[in-house]
Length: 339
Image (cartoon, rainbow, N blue to C red; front, side, top):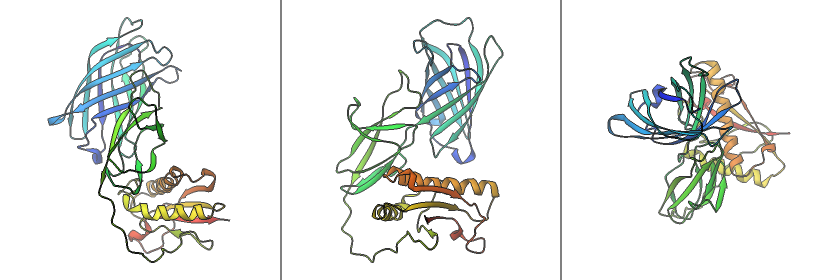
């Protein structure tokens, strides 16, 4: 955003499922004006308090000229599915100013799975004011906040182009990407950066993972049936998702780890990962959801080191029911060895 705003209203149109969601935190991203080539890295930092009262700042710099910096005071109210944030005051600015500042509003949607705010602004037609769009991401722990001491755990965070560091000074990188497979023995704080349009205001976000008691030794169990079979697709048992989303539930981890072990034991095998849904709901939405769930399994495997060339995905929606509908067993992810 140019140094041009006196008053800006952010009207975040939230989906019903996100009602009551606390949006406190730091959102990092960019504002762009198409078809123009210029852009403005943006950092929105807000805190939501009692009664839905919101306060914070929005700071931006010119992508073409980073010496142009502006910081706005944010005040707002979160009420039900709607959030109103007003840029009520300019706190700080550098660089050459403008004769007038655009006034307008943004309509945003919130994607809980990606911790993403997407917005389209509309400004009054003054000088070069025009529509623009924001794309902002928040770093947030998406896996369990506590893991067993000494056990291998997969930590997951949201964010765009994220890098994990073990120190606030960002001298010791420990991982890259939204998943990090590690074994912790003490409560640990990681410092996460986003590479998506960083600016002078972008800083590391601390994410703390607590460590609880070690897991008790398990009794030997009968070996699980192999998942990789040449003859036919195999449904992955207990690979489950949060209702209506492509967010994997923690119960999926043992099966996915077994799949990883079998892939490592057979390094030349390639897989097709297929998503399926039941027949409830719109066919187009079911097809999209099945594709997203197959891609979620693919992302998990990529995050633990499986080569991308070994995996492909497809979604069938409810076109290949195994059981008479309605039956929850139709909601499945299958793997098939490619010849």
